[in-house]
Length: 138
Image (cartoon, rainbow, N blue to C red; front, side, top):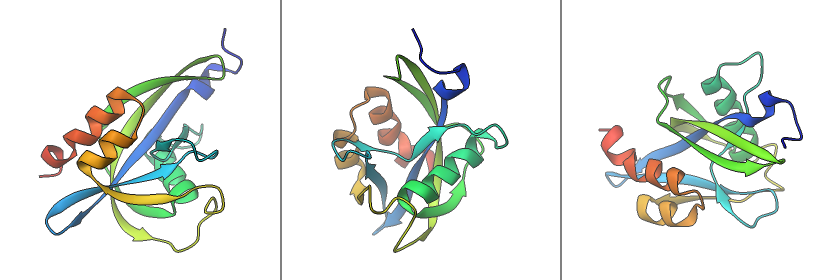
């Protein structure tokens, strides 16, 4: 039985990327407790579109901003708060990376190759989305 209102289980995320030496890299961040590697995500805020909400999370959680696609790259889900969170994932081409950001004292971030990033995340569907990035950004 879900503990929170339905809107809490509707989430959006960005999959931040950049190109280095002609190859894409993915930015992952640690969860707040530092035990898992994740992408910036959160509950879709009522006054924002899913992509705008995800961009806001990217700035708060990872200190990055950039060009967010309006088209959903894909979806994944995970269990939390006694329910299932459904996450829409958007690509973000990072154009700005801050030295300090709102959650820099709670999270670490790291740029990784596609293969390393895919191996670090727990959710199989998110892993698949990471592996799709090179073909999608061409």
